Image (tube, rainbow, N blue to C red; front, side, top):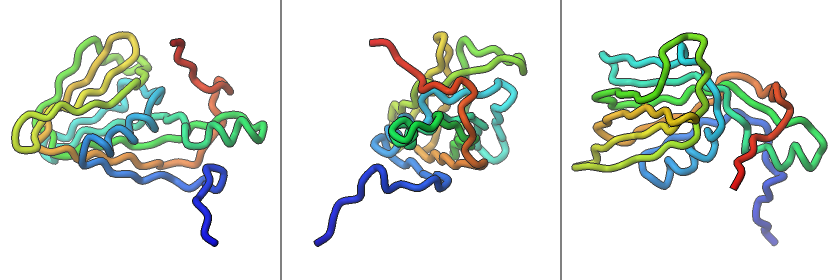
Length: 158
């Protein structure tokens, strides 16, 4: 008899996920919610049409298991990379290298022929807007998980 996989069956392997449509992006948005990063870790390579962030991602995929086993929640450094970027705009985002930004959500607003705008919603009313030729987003963990400095799971009051 076969049995469905259980959440508890997961391992601590590095994530490498791709988003090519809105449904895929919802998964990446959930996994990157509450990620923090210094403003200095934003990179737009105009010649390669790539925008990247090095983020300290809260490991939502491990949070329930960590709590159940009495472990502190974890973060991991990840690269969030967007290809086919034509234009980058920001609002309410300080370019000061010491500024720490917090990512709340990723959303995509399609326009024509697969083109559209990828929005990074940040805490404190900040936003980064990418005009893209096509939705092509990669999330890849690049370090081993580490104990979250706060030792707490982020909360969002209702």
